[in-house]
Length: 353
Image 1 (cartoon, rainbow, N blue to C red):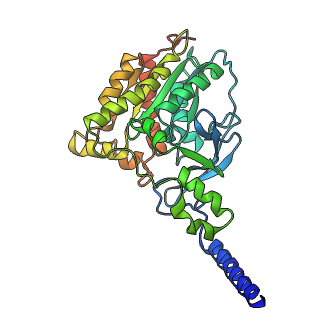
Image 2: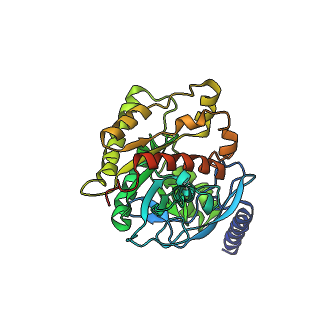
């Protein structure tokens, strides 16, 4: 019996020592910045009953990507990246609600250089008799068209905007409606992870060794990127069926005296590089169908593609090299064009409110 107890003690002690070594050597996967990452890993998230996830109100943190940016960011009491909270009423001020993903959130740039802030400055010309304009940006990294519709339904009744502008990123928004269904994400300690990662981390909190040993028993398989690299006509048709109901809900906020809705097309760095190099770029499968659906539903399409063709519109200046989000100059470039387009399409006095 003494030998058995001694053996058990040795084994337990060995496991304990190994566990401690593993905890010291193996980095926490949720908090590892990842030097080879292509973009900042979003933090400060909480579970949202409608949108799956959103930012924690009042959260402050830092965006870090080695060699590209390292700066603070703040979330206001309403869960938006802003320094102030917005009251429902805004007498004498024309309010624009800007919806989108990481491009609207402003990954990699200080708050004052985000698309929403630069658009607000571009619209407030200071001319005599001009109406002050306020831009409320509701952008969260990873959001897609379904989230934009839910954001509009959430914030239009609360903020009473005069106009809703949706920044539609052609690089992934077309297929994003199917992403959450193929691999729903969950929030763990402020980070967005897959269900497999959440299951693994739940075990890792108690034992790194147990987590390593039980990986093959996870009830959730490893998922591949569900976006088809070379979508077939059937893939495009499926995408259109998935996205149309959400575009309909987005357009519906204009009913019964609601604000008009416009969609700003945003293009990725790779597409624009190809466009400038060849004059044609590459086909974005499904985009013509999506634009047709938007127009059919009464959503005004604002497409700044032509401004990227002149020689001074180099993507090296307007996008981060690795991260590929807009730099401050890129946001300024798009904001100036958007301000001009809004003045033409929605001059003061044309909004519903």
